Image (cartoon, rainbow, N blue to C red; front, side, top):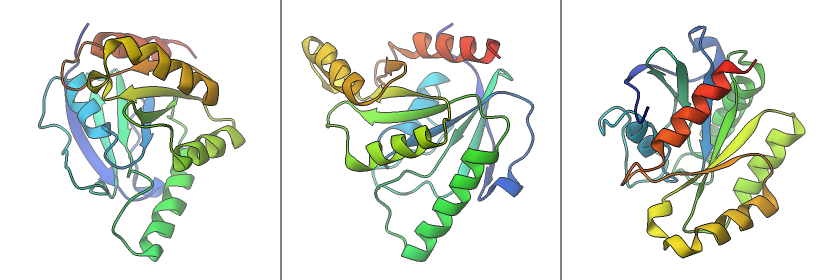
Length: 192
């Protein structure tokens, strides 16, 4: 299975606005412009499902996508860059923390790391926060197609030194890893 149908359901600012889906949910964590929206579009092979932008910080709400009634993907605002006030950033942080800590449908968090760059300080801070609350998480390494194939294992080794858990490669351009990721998510959904 190399793709699933997906549809955008709703956006929410905070937990109290999040609808109940009764499906496993996977929130996407990552810096702005790391490729979370491109990931959603590639999984369903439809470039128009999630809005992508070259301008960091465009995602301002929790955007829910239903993948073939198998699971929900929640696209979260990126961390690390946004041209918004400190007050708005504080409100986002409070709302996102409440969502991540209290949303019962969450099966696992997914943290996105850009293969072209070293793990950033805010990536490490996010991971430490997740670990402090003992939340399930795995890592997806995006934009791997920009890296020569011979360097893939070195990138994986560097990430494994800093982040535990499973690490999956991803490329929105050629979609070669989509089947593996869909299989991985589907297996997670089956495990209680």
